Image 1 (cartoon, rainbow, N blue to C red):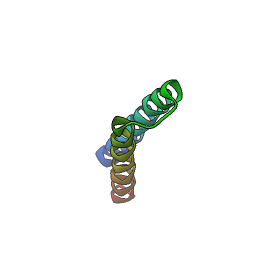
Image 2: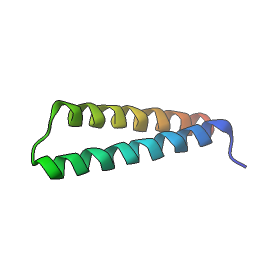
Image 3: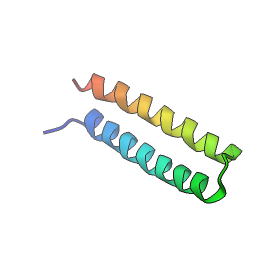
Image 4: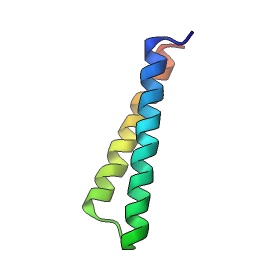
Length: 59
């Protein structure tokens, strides 16, 4: 059974993945990166870092 930290880490990973998908779709449709695309990438990166930290906590 996975602990709460593992479940939260997986939620962070899934959310980051969806954010990056949305950002990529926007980038592909406009052909350039907007400020919002950069924000999406930074938030997704933060979620990945948080997910990794939580994953280590639960061992």
